[in-house]
Length: 62
Image 1 (tube, rainbow, N blue to C red):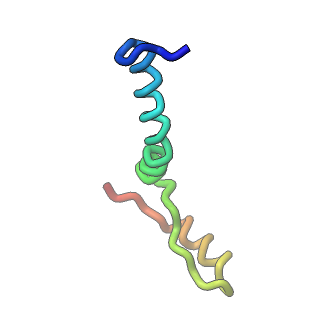
Image 2: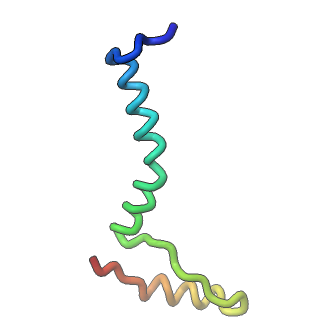
């Protein structure tokens, strides 16, 4: 059965879907905020060493 347009249940479903749609972007921004942002990629030959270096040297100046 469908909830009537404008009812409390209708609003709950509508706003819940909007929040769920925003979740990935908010999670990405939270990761940046706590300093867990993506690292730049290096060359394929030195990928492991470059990644280790980047993890040790990243900062989050905000």
